[in-house]
Structure formats: structure tokens, C-alpha cells
Image 1: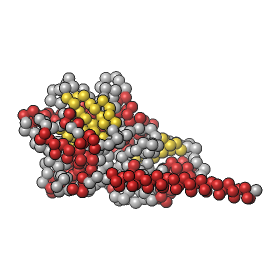
Image 2: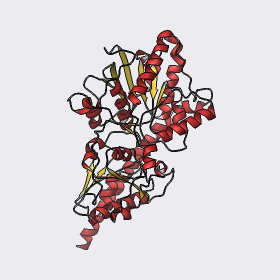
Image 3: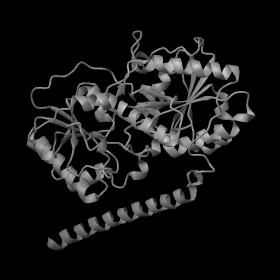
Length: 439
């Protein structure tokens, strides 16, 4: 379920993908909205949602670190932009209460901490901000944790009808309030394209790296060898490998990254196929040029489906939660790399597509209506106080600080990099000495 922002006017970039949303009649930007986020895909989600408010609110975007491509495409010049190094000073201050609306574009545990801050201090202020939460990417089917982390927000944006059904089951099980749920879709600012012709073999293929999958180094080497074999088998085609990591910039899955895709490719694939291109560009720029999108598991696959691009989900490394591809069960999109090499491209199952990847035409109006009701309750002093499912008393482990552990693993990472450097240096010197002896 991919949500596109509708076009108005004739401007380019993020502006021409925005749609006006009037929240309780505030068309003169009398209200303030904060997007509180951290890294790449979560910033994308939060700012894509904020674009619906750009004509009715003054928008501030706080993030920890993002590539320049995301900043250029998603953040408009009139937004206030603040980069932070540590979320704690923001949560420990009164900053969140300066805004009428807060979009929490954070991971589950950080969203819990932010909502807990508002819940703990809401009695200190005349009014609290309305909190909007959601999911920046794929939800693991049957895993309740992500939803329960966001339970307590005034509005929870849901990615698909499949997720909506599962969340409603959880609401019944745990006796929760169903009113915050709003069907949204995968919020991205992609340009909608006409459906591409499905006949003939693909000429431009995009492979999207999924960080930490596969996690096994030998499996990752096998993946690269198979991609290289595809490129060699079809020398007239272009294979673009979209890398998740940008050198020196953290991202949402940095903690899962054990092996650099590009470095392993450099040392294991010989000779390098000339028709393989590595790209750090945003998928918004790459996808329109492709006619096949391949990955082990990625939200980008849903973006490609919505844009009329053929999609394949690699099955070589198994199907399960360990590889993160169970969301595609029933899609008909699983295929082996060998079959892809033979141009056996799968077709998506229509029922699965409808349940998992069709966007909501009524999202803007549903959100407007819901916010108007909440605004009125706040104005009358009848807004329900925030109450989290994962509160401090019932789930104290979610509030433990991880700073000490972070420092330890940072040092371990530095030591590992130093060790690898000296090993490579020793190997090169040994090779040079051997060549000299042979001569």
C-alpha cells in the first residue's frame, strides 16, 4: 500500500507532490507541527506525512543524520530544520509541548520514550500535542511489538489492510482503543508512472540491498557471485545495485550491518562485470528508470509495484523471519536467482496486491476528520490523556539506557576495523615478498 501525495501547481521537487490539508480551519499556519525522527527511511516517512500539513502548519523537522539526497527531495525550503546528536536533551526539555502536532517517525523503543515523556508531563501544560505515529516500512506479519510500541498515540497510520486486520485482533486481545487507527499506505513522495509494458526481458534491473540480510558472510558472497553471473549472462543489460549505506552516514539499520556489500564485492568478484553499477542515489531517482526491481525483502518492492515496475523477491536464502520476507507469502513473487537469470520473472498475485499494496484514496480526508475531532476535544479540555500500553510500571526493561553498551560496541567495531586493516596490509606485503622471491 503506497501513498502518493497529489500534485498541485507546476512546481518541481517535493513541492509538487504535496497536498493541502486544512486542520480545523487553520489555513494561515497558526499551528506548529514537529517531525521528530532520526535516520533515512524514517525521515522519509515522517516528512511525507508532514507534506499533507504544509499549507496549514509551520513545520519543523528534527533528525539525527540523513543523506543530502533525502534532504533535497523531502524537506522544503520553508521548513525549519534542526539536526541533533542526542535525543535525550529534547525529551528532557519542554520542546515537544511547543507544538500542536508531533509526528513520531522513530523506531519502536524511541517512540515509546517520546510518548512516555509527553504522558508523564502532560499535566504540567494547558494542552498537550496531538501525537501521530506510524511505520516507515514493512511490518513482520504476526509480530505485535511494533504496533504496541505506538499504542498511546492519538493517530496511528497503518500501511495495509493486512496490518489493519492484525492490529484490530490485537486491540480485541488487549482491550485497547481502536479509534487511533487510520489506513494510510506506505507514505513516500514518489512520482506516479503509467504502467510499464510487461512483455520482453528487462533491460534495466535494480537490486536493492537489504542490510543484514543475509547475515551470513558466505551467503552474502554467494549472493554477489549470483548477481555477477546474471550480469555476465546478459552483458547488454544494466544491473544497478542500490546500496543502503553511505560512507560515514548512519541509517536505520546501521546496527545490523556486519559486512560492507561493496567491499566484499571488490574482493570476491573477479573480474568485475562492466554492466554493473553501484548507486547511493535515492530510490525515488532510480526507480523510474528501471523495468525490474529485485530484493531479498524491502519496502522499495512495494514502491516499484505501485509504479508499474515488475518485482522479484529472491528466495535463495529461505523464507522466514530470519530473512524478513514473510510479508511476501502469497504474493507469487518469490523466485530464485537462477530462474531470474533464465528470465523467469514472476507475476504478482492480484488478491495479495490488493490486501498489501493498494493505497487508501480516503487517507487525507480520514486524517483531516480525525484531527478535527481531536482538535475540538483539546479546545474543550476533553482530550483523553495519553496512556501507553508499554508504560514504565509494566514494561521497565524498555526504558533502560543503552549508552554503556553502545560505547562498548563502538570500541569493538573500531578494533575490528583496525584488525582487518593490518591483516590486509600484512597480506599485501606477504604477496609482494613472494613475488620478489619468485623473481
